[in-house]
Length: 183
Image 1 (cartoon, rainbow, N blue to C red):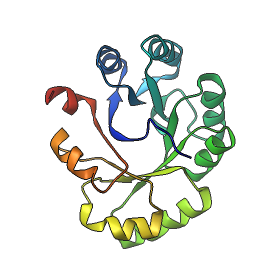
Image 2 (cartoon, rainbow, N blue to C red; image 1 turned 90 degrees about the vertical axis):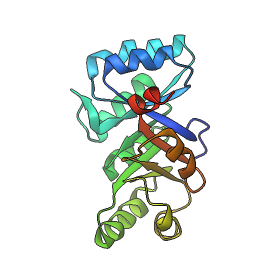
Image 3 (cartoon, rainbow, N blue to C red; image 1 turned 60 degrees about the vertical axis):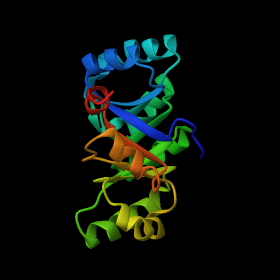
């Protein structure tokens, strides 16, 4: 699935206070995490008013079950621009609901890469977010194992480094606080 919002540097907005600052920014999309489920109505209403899009980090929404039922609920209620999870069952539920599914994987060694490739093969996400992101030398290996549509995330020190990673990755997620600090 091609999603125009899953491109470039995407701020990871941590908490509702930072989300309000994101709404005031000129950035069109964010990954929203570490907010309570009860605040999502207002968050999505605010995004619509500002013509912005939200990618939800399903595993990091407080009060939401981070399983396929939670994914189905937020997909039906909010129709986010996309959603992120480490869980293959959640990815499958998102795809059934036609929400752009981003599977997050953590690469700590070759065994983790092999297990992640297996999980990605089963779930068939639209995109794979690779954590940690500063892995440009491994991109050919990662693309061979995981597919072409890769997102870099985690441990991105500054916007300049994020821009450099865009040479190899479709998108880069990085802390909104770091983006804001360097603006």
